[in-house]
Length: 264
Image (cartoon, rainbow, N blue to C red):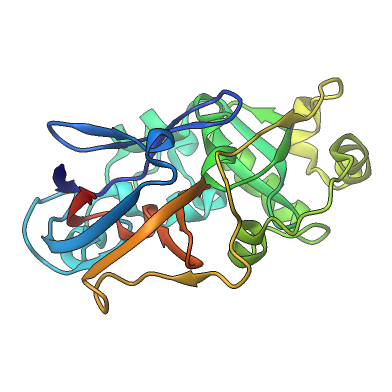
């Protein structure tokens, strides 16, 4: 059976373990059901997630011209402290920016390879933690807009990491941490504008991933260099497919690539 479509990040459902779905325009794959199956991934062409053209993907699933034009790829996406919709100031498209920026946002701590701070829209909890491969996470601040979340993250980055080591995450070499203790330790560094939004009484969310075997030396599959790969699927964590030979494939990093997936 072969399925073909443009890659977008896997959809997920919070359960024990996490349920993953690879969704195409006219079909979808339930990835948990494919564990222990041998599958082939073949690169077919590019398809920009904005214009739909067969043009090389630059970043985030977009071709270069779209990446530097559309609001979905503006700098404030990756750097929320640059948000300006709360001031009524347009970056690329004020209507879109108001829609995304002027809604509740969460500043959180997540433990994926180490404890890190991050920002997400409240509607994306716990999806954001699943995408990062975190096995535990906790909300520490809930603010009414993206800007306040961004400046809080910037302030906390001086005292806790904001990066994930993807190899450590995939090897599952992770120490359990008391995130409530971390939250209390970092409380003093929250900016004055966001102090009133501190979440004082909540507990960690724990996440379990569908993995039979973790890689010992993960090596990333690059479909542009290896346009045809076959392997036995043994796990899904974060946005990665994990194969028995230690090959890992980051679905989200390959958004905008049209692939054919054959279940052998």
